[in-house]
Length: 427
Picture: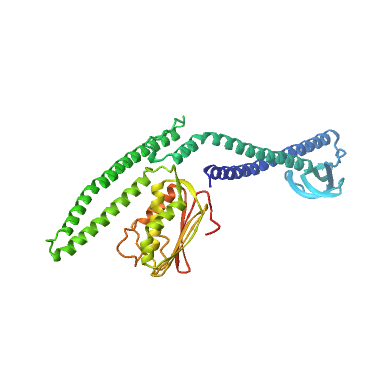
């Protein structure tokens, strides 16, 4: 939920409650005032009757209209004071029940005691109250609507610096090697936000540069001693005077050095990809590259008696030749290394993407960890370093390609969808 929507709901709900409470209080106050006015009119009528009685010693002729009428009757029980009441009664002129305001009092005329009741219709008063309340409700609704529109316009304008900051942060990348520039806003809170974000990105960029330099230097400096160790172990293995009991140890050292060199190269490659050191600006012929790699691996394919089925069309995309070579080599290497004797490899290449499937004795791979660094499925042996699929994943993300894995019909299937395709129809 957006902040404005949440604020608007709270503001409107609060305003409605306040306006409803205020309207109810206004209704009660208005009704009280109107009743008091009716009482004043009834008091005036009583005063006029008393004045007439004092002057003429008899009761006047009572006024009877549809809004006011009187009832006079003899009584033996005098009232101590005049009484005001509100009741629902029949209007003799309208022949229907309605709310009435009544004043009741007694007067002595000669030797007779009379009870006089003067009724005043409240219909006009109630209609006026309803009209005033209706106008008030309409005004409240208009105020809420206008307030909502004004708030929406003002808040949208006030929050523009915030959204500008968000857009700038989304586009910012540490690999750009340039500082994050956020303009002044004129609003203290947004200025504080921009300052904090700028300081944070400066620290992150500094730490990134330090890490980048360390990674590059470490990988570069490791290559020389590894090459020296490999050279010396190879020389020792060629020495005819080498004792047989030492040969196995030196061979193990040579193998470990080779694995360490490959690991160093893989980590350096990952660092270069993450640091944006590769630009995808070369035309890569995937069909030619795939055929080249199949020819290079043909000896291993024949040695394991593997059957390879191809469905390849000429495909050229803008990519990086070295990265494309790594992707195909890693996938093809895995399909051969973890295959079974007399197994099968199926390769599909079209303008939608690239797919390679192979039989294997391994069960389905753990898709939640498959592309993690240094993940090795149990039963794959000690030869790999667990970085091949992670490198492929990084390359695909760099090119905005999508890679998926499926295990179907006892075959492991890796599919790379090119960035201009959602899902190849032939896969």
